Length: 274
Length: 323
Image 1 (cartoon, one colour):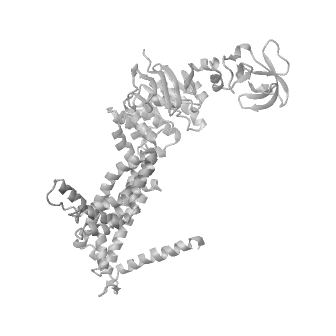
Image 2 (cartoon, rainbow over the protein chains, first blue to last red):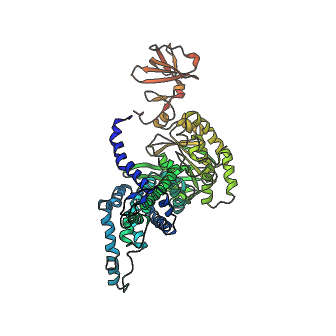
Image 3 (tube, rainbow over the protein chains, first blue to last red):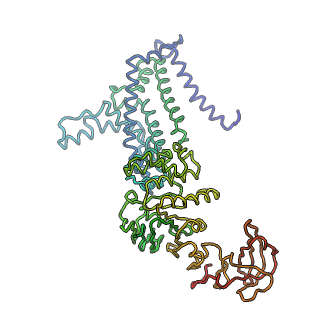
């Protein structure tokens, strides 16, 4: 032990990170017990089952929904980050506002969307009383609701790194672009966005990774109809009582996220971020 | 022929502070001009108003006789070489040079950009990004990026300040050569009097937002109109109300006759290679420097001497000397 001061951190990481990870990894290669739990023999079958079209569809669906949520976060978050970066002395206030939702629990924020989107919720009753619609729109318990919930919850994860890179952008670059004949829109697409690409990609990965593994949002807002890989894992450990398969799916999720992060860190963008 | 650039009574205020104070200036096509002054004198602000990055509080900027006050930078036919070059970090040298050509919809971009890179001798490094280029190379890319657009006027904001001294001298010569070759009017902002003197056809000395003198380097150096100009464009010794340049100040042991002179004591003698600087303390406590040829270096520290000069080398000003 070279540095004794690191000992508590090492114990912590060992007990609460390495050990649980090792347990999940082992479970993934064991056989399901009759009443939950795991038993021998060791097997690869749990991983093989993930290729089953039924489960592969869930994986693809998760990728699709997380991808869509990420795309919306980028489309909504980049103009917001740009606005905050250009807001001068009010930038601090706007950043606080972006972070304000974090002061309440994730669960409560997600429940709030149920109150907004359900048949007797705020949106539907407002539209009904305005006479725009006669019967409530199916806003809740579908992919759209899951998407709204994910975008809403993870938008700040995109805005913060995007803001940080745009804010660091040398204003002389924008002046140089104008000097060379570029109008503001052209400057945005040819200078601002490419130069802040590292922040945009970092923010997108920060959104995609937790969205990919999300389970609470699809559970509450998707009403069980919109199954993502997170829900699949949760089911294996609860109702299905198939811990080994749940562990195998967890490993897949973790591996996919790790690959994405590794790619990010090894790319030019990652080197610029470090 | 109308002036390529004319400034009429240009004023710029920043929250109660006057940065540029009634500046008027007229530049003819094809010259190399400098705005020279200490930092904070308003020279960069003046340049930024010409480029369109600052709006004048009052006064006019005219390009080829037309008022451009209301035009955005991208609508003005001038280009700027920024102090820290402001090269686009995500683009190669070649792409940086192409940037403006594409924005302005110029045809035959590849060839034009290559010719510009050739001119600054960077054709071999066309695919390097700014991070892979040295300071001098970045400087050249910035120059090529602006010159390729063939602007009416090229603005250079202390472009040599970030380079090391040796490179600075080399780039200085290249800048001058480039200006002569292209025939584009250059307006060069600097706080380095040597740069301004050696490069300019005409230079304007600025102080506290005003132009104190505008003229050919020789004129301004030999016949400075104000004490500030005299002091800023090289060293000056003050003998009462008369200012004398160190190279016109002489030292001797015997009292000279027929010329103005002062008693002094040698404080130090500095060998500078091509010449020697004798620093002396006058009887009234003032200091003076005499620049002499090497072989005359026989004065010891503490030695009592006479400083003298010719009447015709005296610079006289109506106002009081600075300090």
